[in-house]
Length: 430
Image (cartoon, rainbow, N blue to C red):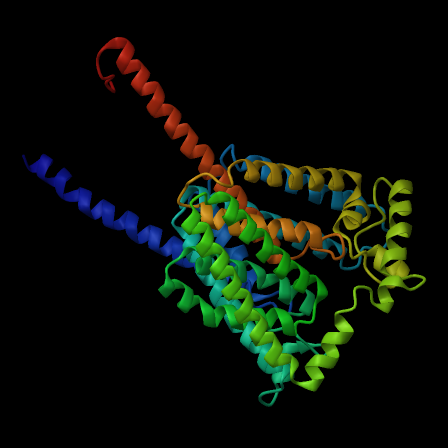
């Protein structure tokens, strides 16, 4: 009796311990995602924190399942391609550090995917942490743009809002996932959710606008349109579709009014008219961005092992500004093949499950829409060192792994029912 009583009493304690461990894990993940919004210098707190977190997690049970393994393999092959390309250089300089950062960021994608698969409850926490970081860094960028207090200019670059980032062209895209997440809540949640989302939505929208990044503008607007279309297709009920249309119009009106107010400021209107041009001088000049694409692809044909990471910028004065060209030149043909396979696998695999009614479907949809936008944006900018891009990859692969687990569970139930039906009794565990 005492033994039985002891066993029974131990169960609540074990449950409490497991719950405490889950809370600690979720809190650690939340802090890591939050820190991804503060990268004003490298190495950033994000790198230092995530390196320690991944190391500790690996010691205490980080599990890479068969569903996540392809992501790990393809990203490792991508970085092996970088090592091959690095071998073409006589003077390495800081290139080993560059490849090390690439590999570290790849591991963060695998880490987030593995965590989401084993602890799906972290998904809302990840998005809320990302939203909090986006609001803070947006406010910093906006205040910096208007020089609202002494020293505020540290939150700008080239006269454009950069928030707590080194580059406005990374700051703007970082804000897209939280912005799309808020838009999703506005279109699918109740009136209270829509009202609560309005203020942070305006802040993030203004942050994207004041980045004066054409890529960020196109990404934000394109993702919003794709999200609206996806929700309209997914929901067949007339009243739901009417709500989506009404809320999307309301969100567009709110964003437009905020931008129109900003454009009443002459300096803002002047910079906007300059940045809104489809092609800038550095795009169409004799050795501008578009001309460099042709030169770079000819180099890639002649150098299947690459020319060395960052070497293109040393030779022509500007980086590739095209992730596909960068993969070829900085990561060799092997790296390009691995990256291309990864993108196709991710896009196809996630699309197959995109509209299934699952608890994680809203988070998958938001991440997927922004991933498609980043793939398109990658044709005019390098994204191989964007921390949030790897977070998006990890979220999508984590959701894909969750679907695999769900299907395996459903299959197990079906097999069990078939066994019961055939044998006429409930199978027992020996």
